Image (cartoon, rainbow, N blue to C red; front, side, top):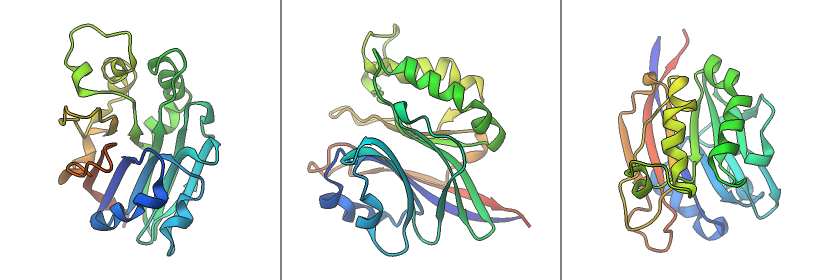
Length: 221
């Protein structure tokens, strides 16, 4: 079995992607999970980019984009009310299963996220899918012993329940406290990322941050 690598970016662009799309150029991503993006985000990248988008408004939604020859296929029913989008990314004989997400609030962020994970549990477990996107969680809330009654408790609750029960562990940890980063990437222990870096860490124009993760990808013989 030959090993290739794939570069995955998860980024909450906080709207205005038409002004920010060049940020991706420096990272040469293969697959991008883009939160709070407009419906035309695929065409804004140009070239032979492939993608899928869901949202309740053309100016605000969630996209999974494929670049460098990767094609995005929707193969499972999306949980549109919570912005959870399961896809298969394919390039030749290579493939990767992924759930892009941008957790939406319904009272809090925990309950709708758990509902979406339950609906997609078979896809996540059977395909070994990666979860990537905006969980609406914050490192400053993660550190507290008791779950606060605010959005930041989502990640702690997920780690203790739905994610850990499915063998899913975080590949990224938010470490920049001066902002409120919410984007994360999680998967099973076989992800074995070879590098993890911040996206836009020092660029004050794009305070919504993200992650760039490179990991090996096994290609079937």
